[in-house]
Amino acid sequence: MRLTFRQAKVIYVRRSHTRQIIPKKFRTKTQLYLGIGLTEQLNIKHNNANTFQVLYAGRFLHWKGMHLGFAALSKNK
Image 1 (tube, rainbow, N blue to C red):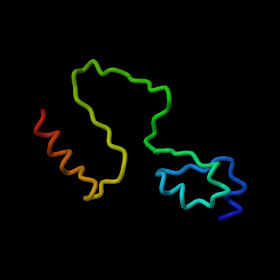
Image 2: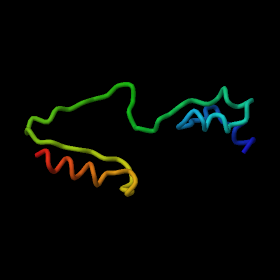
Image 3: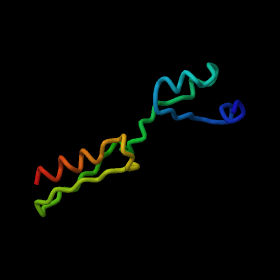
Image 4: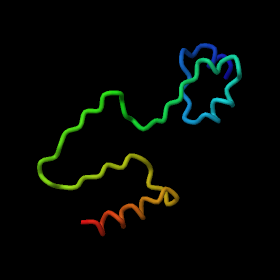
């Protein structure tokens, strides 16, 4: 791993405690990246059809609670 850290220009981490796992001499290369897929410029297109749309990006694991989200959204028609 040290060779990988040494050769990397940037090391992306998702949480600050992950940064603490990286050896001290390579921590200056780390950047916090949340992985939510948003860029600095967010292009929003408005839907003129008066419909409600939801985009969920992720795995449908029971502990993420999306079944609760779907139930709440279905009641909010």
